[in-house]
Image (tube, rainbow, N blue to C red; front, side, top):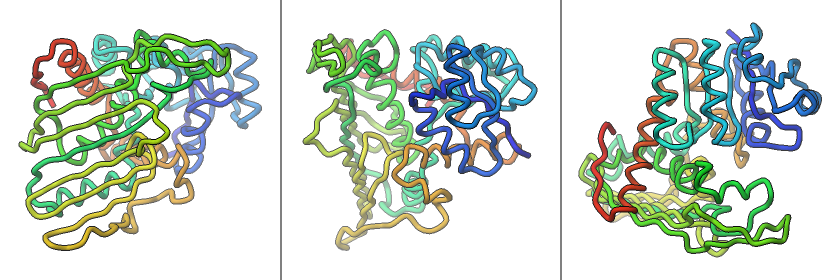
Length: 362
């Protein structure tokens, strides 16, 4: 059965929906991009013509209630998620909302409650990436033995570096689209998928670059969103963990992750701030020399998209298709998104109070 998709946020001038979701949907069997919605009739028509999408709407309500739409994809700025998702849910249509699910844990709880008993999914594409699934299998199959400790350092912008008019809103913490909510959220979800959830944590966050240049306006703007995040803690399996996510730094490695166990060691080097980006995996057991472990055949169903933002997203749509057809429960839902929002909330409390936080419900 073909799933007819309506995308909210598919802009003719470029957007995450156009860079990642559109090519992913066109690469995955069983999906058809049938409709789109933007903020005005003019922009909707321009996008429909640019991407060859048959139906264009300036109202999410109209898109969601269209008989030719089976799945609503919400891929817009975080402050608009709540309103648009609730409209889509009220139409009794399956919904996929990009991560972060909401602007804070209270909104996430509201959306999770509204989605109970419905097909409602959150866009954690990192756990669908071939390398991430392979790493999970390596750990589960005992490559490192009993997990002892793990340390991850990553770098991501634009926090801490120059912004443009389109990205300046990311510096305002009140918008809910921050280094913590977006990048750390994606990163810790994949991290937890591979090595296990955090049971407790301490955290230190800071704004080390409180003013940055807007290269479009030529003016300096104030940042209220943190550009340095350090989390240490204990995993549910007893291993000791540390994660350090840094703001933009051209001279820093994008991602370095080491996983140490009683019988082996893994090192992951990434090209971006999350594990949805291409990575190189190296491993060793016992006295062996650390050597590359290529992802085996069978994990990657969209090799033609490697290096594109659509690569991991296409694999996420693969598992979503199975879920919608009743054959799988692998796609992360709104309840899972709420758990991750609660984890981020615990990190903020730990940083504000200096006290260790126990993570409930992980």
